[in-house]
Image (cartoon, rainbow, N blue to C red; front, top):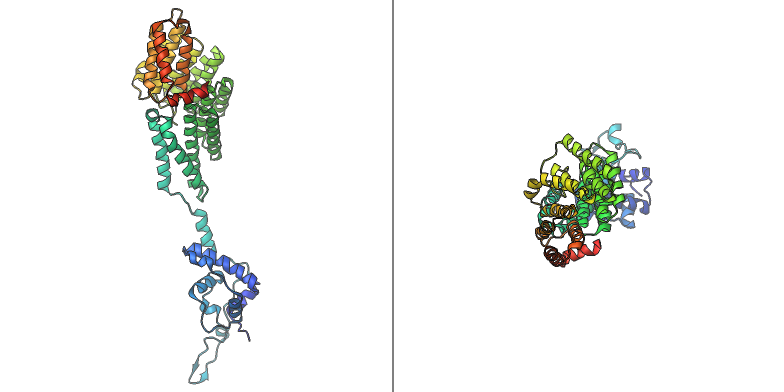
Length: 446
């Protein structure tokens, strides 16, 4: 006859009286316990039909194996010593006389209600929800990696630093496939957005505008998902920057203008106005709009008390005043405002020359050289000397902006092609632009 054990009672109450129903619950409990106790062996435990019949019928001389006992206790919330006992177990006799038992002694503990949850399950689930595959040290490492890339960018260039930026982005994406609490997940989104933004900027410098647009779109979407307006506006500025060098000037202006409209007083709008709107408007010939936009950028610079010096081109920090004026110079070159170009360039000359950015020094020289050719009385010798200096400053780290402006300078010097200084510049430009990195940029700019 089957023994009416506590195990049998609990299984009847939970409708686990068949092997199939019991085995399914048993295996789920084994998997949960394996995770909770970090003992993967338990996850593979199963119960055979014969074992189930013996357990259910109470036909045991000894308790099940220890691992099975652990799973049963986790599953049913009772010690196995109770699960396999009956109301008659534990009776004692003294001197052969049965001792009277009270109702409390005879009655088994009331089984839990069917809708009760196992406290261990609740604790396990809480641990799962708050678990994270990224600790504070990992987040700090990713953040410092991005800062390192930005700080070294103008010395090492995109070809050296692009692999590292890709690794940061990939690691952030891999971690995001796992589990984190909200604070950590938000930080991983920010890191992933900024890594994509840096890669988008690098793609502009290497002339891959389609890739840049994709990276910038990713950066915007990720930053918007977490409400990171600073990174979002920076990514919009980089997208406008990409559209500008792709020759899509109306779109570059519209992209920057839409971002400014969202947060007109935000510090990132200095870059959006000077680098995004003013230069694109200069290319479309809108003099009045260029003046208004540059003025707006300078007033915003005063409001935020930005650095006076030439900030890094790829920095996530707000534009410094010298960087804003350097962009104003480029805008006035497009409008052939020669006198304004020379005045602004002279105003920032000392700051530019003391900047560690060889690209910035090169670009300002090319702008001034172009303005010298646009004068009523062109200064060809001086213009070509500045052009050669610009090429030498870039050396073996060409970027699309330097390539485009040095090429444009060569074309604008066409009327003086027989002049010795123009021939010398032409020879140096052809040599400089024949290096592999420059050829890659040239192919996308043509």
